[in-house]
Length: 103
Image (cartoon, rainbow, N blue to C red; front, side, top):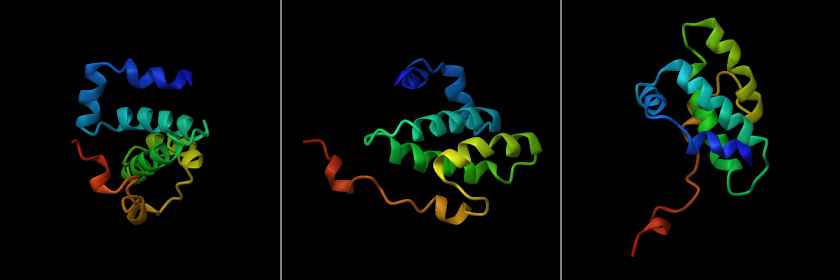
């Protein structure tokens, strides 16, 4: 589970790039989610797969062919197929909305 350190050690500059939807930052995060998809942990795998698919859907039409080419590895890891863009954003929530209420 050493892969979890990536999230814990994420720098503010990287987070800002993600918020700006920088393609390279999204690709790096997508690759990380791809690694997590292969960890086979019940509490991580589904969420990692959903997030990875969403990133693949955003980047699959990117103008830079290098980004699209590098997207193949995370797409394979999470089961994303090219052209699946519409269904990637329709993932079911992991928990019902009322399950997460704070008392």
